[in-house]
Image (cartoon, rainbow over all chains, first blue to last red; front, side, top):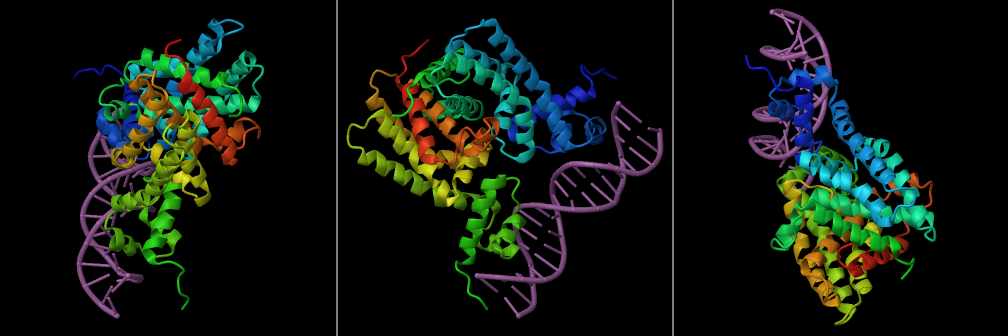
Length: 203
Length: 203
DNA sequence: GTCTATAGGTTGATAGAC
DNA sequence: GTCTATCAACCTATAGAC
């Protein structure tokens, strides 16, 4: 009998992460997951009790490292970071997570407005959003707090759209845009968002 | 017997639109829809054959008027519209559709990456995206076409985030932001995105 | 911890009376 | 066109053997 590289619980988490990212939480059944993981159906309920609890575990496993990276990058930028440094600290950790194939999952979380997922979203993102709002408010003292919140919301939406629908860009532009070149995507989004943050209120 | 205000087919479309917007396409069963519409389950299959076909009908009914409004607003702005005019023509028709309660549906479409919805999305949006990309390219001749596409993608993401997760802003900011004030939201997003479009490439 | 088997509920779609 | 009744397929979750 060939020993497995990882234990059943991790196999389930990996398979669930992949399929949730690909097809969404609703559209992925526990049977899809156990087939992908090559484990028995009942193992899911043994390790995670319910499907909702599995979703929670899948998300929690990935979000905290991203937020930790955000905090450390923001901290590394010193006591008076530029807007660009703040935006990079906010965006780079999640954009570059693609390598581990978890960006689709993050995109899916951003794109699922249902109550349960929203609660997870708030639980894991609210604190880091407050941290970055504070940093941006310090870098842009002339901008009202509400305006900071709005513009961070816009930036997060742009980011989410890359994660969820980035693949559409090459199709619409006949290959002109390449969403898989993450450093270039990051540079573009930071340029765009930084200019947006520096804009004078009203038009 | 009290005559109904609208026929069964329209009642189904209205109920489906409402529930798809609220809870998503997957999470809304045909039984949910027929209960909301107060019609018989079999009526759905009689009028629309399949659920996918119903989804198509619901989306098609709303998207074309929005795109028509976009085209006419862009046309009304004359042969050399400003970036602000172009962005307003693109954003206002969908942001102000909220009054008819269809913004949740639009947000849901933007936020559903699954294959079938994506095909509908492309079918109904690709042409108008090309039209506005062309207008922006004309207004910003120094900007590479790929850059136009990227920045319109960012703007659409910000817009989608308002439609899908705008309700989070008052919660996170303790009521500082009011997403229901659509003219103010439009002004803010246009200010933000116009500055982003005018940004110099690279940082 | 892992399995088989199944309970118990939902779904989309249809057949056939009226 | 609208109804009742129902099918076949799917789902999550669990009980109980090993």
